[in-house]
Length: 201
Image (cartoon, rainbow, N blue to C red; front, side, top):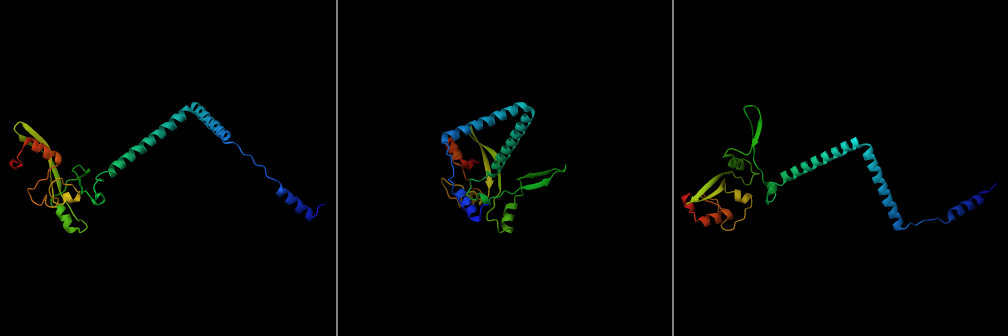
């Protein structure tokens, strides 16, 4: 029978035995990885052939799900892209009107009463600027030549709300009168090319 000192000696010898380590080369490990991946592909192909019906259902479901997700993402991205190029995009709001038709359907449109813009600005101090907007097509004639454009009616705050850059003129006084007019660069070139006198319109 061994005494306590003998046991201590045995334990010490066990812990003092040198450990054995093995170091595999990188190429050998890479070969095993390639072989493992090949086996995974072989097993996947066998399962696809064996359970073709379930495979078609799973792949079709995944494809439909991915397509729906992409379409939803594109729709959300398109909705968030409106007016983002303006400096005050986070503070710009469009007023909509909801109404119920005779047949009971709920409709929504951007048509609002004309005095609403000034009334909102007066009653709500949070609203710094407000503007009405409406447009319609017009045609201008100079002999046998015609120009077809769209003319918009806006308030004085419109240019400041949308930080529109002027090539020529003053932003602060461009629309301070009922008969003032602002032209785009393209429209101004077309009018000058046809030599139309705006005073006739």
